[in-house]
Image 1 (cartoon, rainbow, N blue to C red):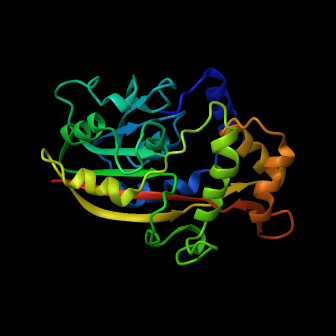
Image 2 (image 1 turned 120 degrees about the vertical axis):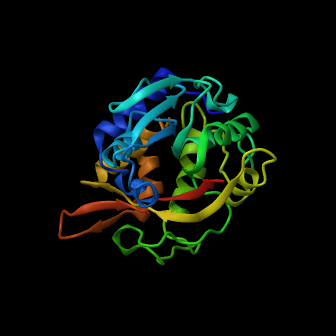
Image 3 (image 1 turned 90 degrees about the vertical axis):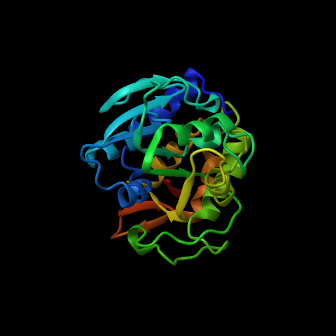
Length: 277
């Protein structure tokens, strides 16, 4: 599991404060599959400082959050400080959720790219109602996935050098910057979503059925190049000078709009959607 230190937490929050809307496009997949939360309760695994929490509450969901490092984000009904790698035993015995959601968190708790920790996988089934949706979004693994329909900015079907728009950039940033230079060092685990789907749908207990497994292109957007460099440095708490960071991300930055327009950093996440049977 990737450890979180107070310094790492502060750096993460600095990034979010620096450009609060940078990750907005990452939320499109949650909006697509969890668009109507009226009267329903969702468990958010790994809330951070509330990027996904706000998205879910805006869609009418009542949100219970859990995080190993952060306190309750605004809008959460209940919050648990816990390590989900050990399962969800901290929840009330009668916990029963209409959905479970996770945004770029599970790679921190996994030790095997093809499996979630067994206690977590078992408990996810135990705390979800029949018919409940589970949506897990994380850093791209090495499996080829289809493109998410109706990706933002018409990105659906667009391709990069690896055949999947944005995934090459994400992989490069993790390989050249995050894995070797984040503090504390990243664990280098990248979930293979088809394998995670098999793990969760072939359980001997309560089971899930697959709904979708896709690649989600979701550019990060910044007002200028300097902010983009600062954001990447702070989000991952990189122990590097900015010239090195700029050398990695500058070739892929693109300007959208008129002169002085928005700066986009092509980004991608993999997404798995399941339904509890």
